[in-house]
Length: 166
Image (tube, rainbow, N blue to C red; front, side):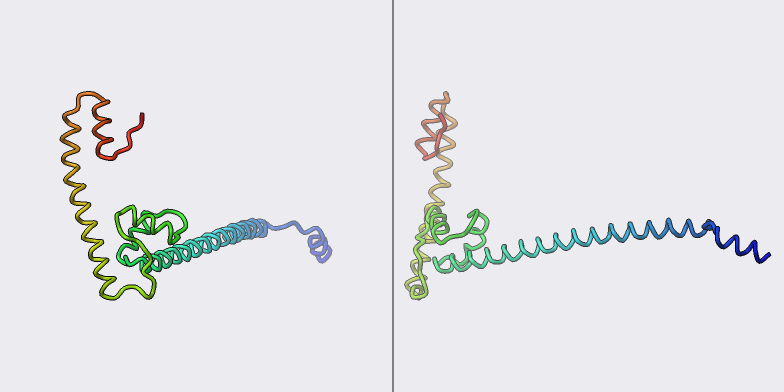
């Protein structure tokens, strides 16, 4: 019997339980590899999110600084929303000037009561311009409603400062 036992050990075939165990180990190794890949992907996404967040914070800070310097600190969110690309003092000044505001740099030496009075006057002026524009919209709509041809409509639009494609 000892010979049979030794012969069996030399030509030992893997038992059924060992084959199942090998398949389980292979599956676990595959799962570990997939998990490592998922972790690397998540790490890259996290790095990208952090970089994007830092860029956004830097942009907001720059906008706040520029708009404060121009004397309109409450318009920061509007500038962030409307001015695309890299924020520069020139670009923000151009945007604010387009709104009808006096967007000259106040700097650190400006301000005071005179600066505040000028800002209030600018805002009041802007309010008057917006009010007249909204009244003009009623006139424009009335005039446009009375037109009979596309040429007349284009003339009315041009009269009110609109660009009409030909």
